[in-house]
Length: 365
Ligand SMILES: *Cc1c(COP(=O)(O)O)cnc(C)c1O
Image 1: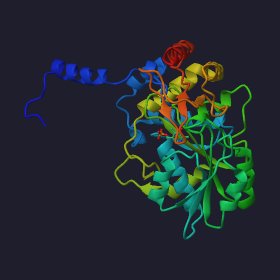
Image 2: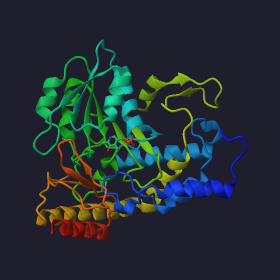
Image 3: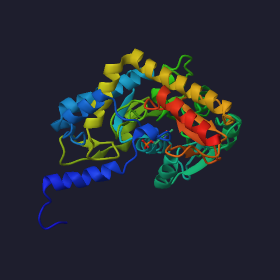
């Protein structure tokens, strides 16, 4: 540390220079995050010093967290679902598997999940000492349900399905997983970190939520398609009592018990997430999602015209191509199977798509 503090102007010119080294979202086609909605930023600033880790000191902010859970629970067809605001999909997935493991004490627990599962499950299984059994995908990159059934045994504590896979934007056959989960009495966690704020607003929604009786818990991230500030995730569970399995005593706080993974937790992104939901309403979210899906279709059509076929027709706004490289200046990513991947987030507007396609065309000329 410096012996004597740095003058403010000097400090901020240093910080600004670092910020200028960051990429602007305009050229980023590889991220599931997007610039926060202006109402999210405004709400975030009002709640900047709040700490949900000690909710008795911040009852107003805490009520907003309850409202977030109620709104998202209702969106997922279970208004009285339990839930809390996490730091994102990773924490939600860890906590869901923790609950599943506690609910079914066995000697060598395993979790059956699709090969498309997010890498956060690798962390979760490592931390929890749970074996990860990965199910191969079908030709459209969805979980092969028959093969999932073969991997389930008496030590399976949870089955995982993904709504909006990170790499290909696919929705696993959750309705069939729900039947299996009920049939074999297994906890079913639905990872809708990305797709949870897309799937409910599609023109032809695919059932994936608590309407399916076998679904036990759902991860959904307001900091992705929910256009909130970072970090805003949410874990929803069918039975609020399950959280008591995770509770520890918290002697010196305003509440006596806590089931969250983090202790100190920011209220600002929670207020931001609520602000976006309230401001947009269902109609507003439908408009955003339908715009992203439309841009995704246009991108796929344009890329195919340029000789880059789609890897698959996605269920949500993630496009993948057989294509070697992107034009200079654009940031795309590659999947593990070597497909170019573009996430059509709200900042990837029609103009951005057309600009990208024009640059692709120039590069190939
Ligand atoms: C993004 C994502 C995660 C991880 O979420 P973080 O917010 O990065 O922790 C988990 N699962 C899926 C399907 C995701 O898209």
